[in-house]
Image (cartoon, rainbow, N blue to C red; front, side, top):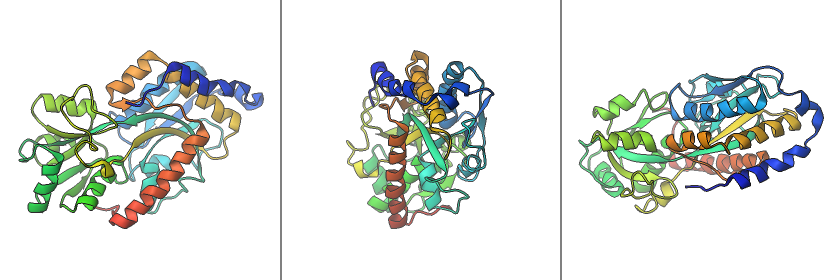
Length: 324
């Protein structure tokens, strides 16, 4: 897992103490709205709530988590450029933020209209299959898809998500057949995977573990930097020979571009403080997330730009479509 220490987090937050005082001293004076582009109960919602609670305590005003699924994550995201640039409206941005604009028209500029605040988590996922599928490894899955076209359908929790991108990249790189079946998040599609109407699913670690242990799913590989302690016998994508099909799934807090720097820095400082908390770290780990090394808002923006270019190129080269 991506290691980070409380000392490192404190170091990242320390320079913010010297931020301009005017805006920061007056902020916040009212509740803040935290938009989530995916349904209640999904991994993005869990991550948002895990950091919202300690940030609320630190900021001294309510942080209202407001799930607004729809439009492949664009419904909630599009609300940010329409909101005042005052730090009172946030969005939990995932990798879909920089991928979906390459798949469909969107009413915003993914880079110019937003100001990153903080990177708060990186998700780990497990490639699973329904036990009815006669494969035990990722390599066998690829071979099965090649020799049995039309037999594999995978749970797509949203076009442009890391799961959608990973599955389509895997198909593109290794030339096998597997059909995307889109849902608004993982929870609505999970029953179909468990009951065999879907054959393949990339699931958050804890969710996968639950159903692997019960025998309802079979784990093939882990989409993470290293093996999960809870699934020590399951190889990573890289160990299985599929390193080039890995997509990092990050979670960042963002506000509207033009938000005063002192407010952005106040929110960043609060997020870094939240990630120091034992309870927050435990909740994120339990949700299958890694705690990332601290990054400044400028560093997060650089990460956005790099992924926007990388995955835009991938979408074009692989012929990935926004529609299924």
